[in-house]
Image (cartoon, rainbow, N blue to C red; front, side):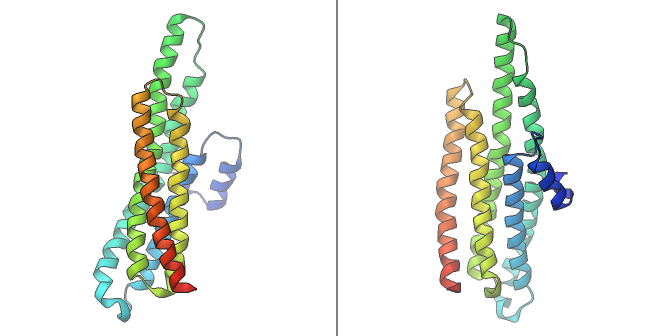
Length: 208
């Protein structure tokens, strides 16, 4: 897995001319960092007498964030895997009518599949944001600024992944399917932006 490398190695590959990882994989990685920050807040809350009444819930949220973090790490690799067929499709010949039709068929399938992974990244990050909301409300006050950083990361991850959807759907011939994917992405952006702004405002209120 890409994120099993040293962070510096991942960044080196990311900054190279290699086609993957790119923005999609980076978005999943940023989402994993958001989840990790949330887990840190949970760990700083668990075991403290002051938060004993919410400890059971915080433990559950920490466990949920671990599941989401692992999923985002996997999606970093899946994004790269989904790009490979699309990259090959661009190179297919188009000299004859049959070749053109075959290229269009392969391209359409590859564009759809390359859109599904970033959509899954968005869905996963949306779930991370829900956990961060609870941690912002009930987690340790000494780590509240880390909740703020986490929600900024989560929003960046979600909106970054959305760009990988739009760049693919604009080329799809099946406009009904393309618009369905776009609408699903648009809806998540609207909801997560609202939630992120709410959580972030709450963080600022507590630290300023």
